[in-house]
Length: 382
Ligand SMILES: Nc1ncnc2c1ncn2[C@@H]1O[C@H](COP(=O)(O)OP(=O)(O)OP(=O)(O)O)[C@@H](O)[C@H]1O
Ligand code: SF4
Ligand SMILES: [Mg+2]
Image (cartoon, rainbow, N blue to C red; front, side, top):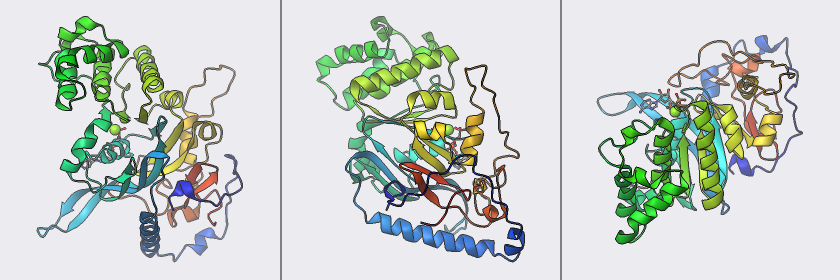
């Protein structure tokens, strides 16, 4: 059963649950075999994934990701056996309903882009299922993906490098419409002008070149290009990070307006929590390739459960000057996903870490309806 379907609910924990320090814990784990425990945990996860594999997809979800993994090979033997890999996305599961926005947050290198690109099959998944409109596309070949390409689009972070410099705006936007036969050939220009209008681009821009535009206008062109093929799912990978703050708001509002008008579904990737808070219905927090917390925006902002989420959220500026900021500064660098720490991957930086955290991986569980977290601060048993 996917984590979101779990029936068992625990008593709602509060974010300021005191850390239970066990004076005997160090002794208890003194002769603990971390490698054997990791092996046991992996087997249990594999078994769970195998059971979930048999479940039918959720008919209410446009996208359902189950136990998705993307490992990059770093080293292999001459016979092709992988000896070292980097776990960029490691066992991620969630569902995205049509018309909603899920925000994915986390520090640089936690696997946000890899997650988005793997869902779109721009990276071949290492393992797991990706149900899009009820079909598992994880093992689809490029030829099988071709008819789905118009339904799944991506908007990149950098509006400068993602537009071909030698084509006019009209040429850039017409090409996918023509290639995918979105409208009759003679209607392409009118169709493109309509999309441009929806994206706040004047009609005389049609004959202009990308270098003649500012970053905000270029990102509007990128949005128009993605939306010109009538997609259902749009992965927005840091679409406003390269823009000035005032322009960021315009682009976010444009994405929201277009969603309301056309019913798009967004997977919105960002490291900026204020932006994610503004646009998302639900939020997933990633750390070192894993989803450590997931829930609807309200419960995740009012009651962040995971210490990592609490630290991230403590850095969001509060517009009310009377509210005192209690910023949690995380110690240490992010470990390498090629060699993640044992137990809870966050234990090397967690302000609430206990002895158990470096030995046993916490279970990813539902603690409030639709609100999941993986942390030993909360009950682990069903
Ligand atoms: N093609 C690749 N080959 C090997 N490693 C890769 C590849 N692409 C990404 N990685 C590694 O995978 C991890 C996750 O990278 P990813 O770009 O998904 O992170 P991110 O959360 O999007 O970071 P940022 O916020 O900086 O964009 C990183 O350690 C990165 O170095
Ligand atoms: S399980 Fe991880 S996040 Fe939770 S207290 Fe331990 S180290 Fe921190
Ligand atoms: Mg990225």
